[in-house]
Length: 207
Image (cartoon, rainbow, N blue to C red; front, side, top):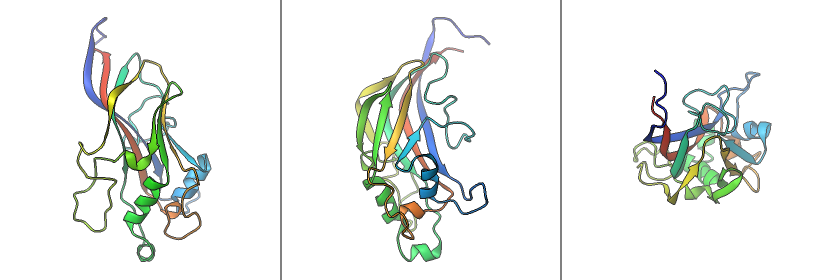
């Protein structure tokens, strides 16, 4: 069925992209968070930029840094979601999952850029996930309460126009904390994911 010219529809939608640390690298060695970052940039993770060869679990963007076709997106909320950690028993004796989560959110700054303009920039703890496993499990740490309403919301929507570049950057100004120390964030093994989710309204042509 072709598009209906001049008629648009608006729906609640999410744009998401993830930084993924696989269980093993291409050589079959155990992959770690700090090593995977260094392969790309030792201080910055960029989201919505590298979307090739990712599964639907990692991203729902079709092209790097732009919306499909002539779509428009109004971002109403932004959240950072972190997967649970696969820690060996030896590491668990040295550091807890909550401590590693704290290293991530208190030592990084997250920035939303639209058309190369900074729309918001704040320490990562400012953007709780609003997602996660039900509380009460001592082996799981969440970035905030697992409630979709318990997250950061823009006071005014941030609009992404058709064909306008956008991305989110997570910067570690002093580098990934604990590099070289067993059990630190840098040494977290895969599989491990960090998602950035933009929650809002997508305007598109009626199909």
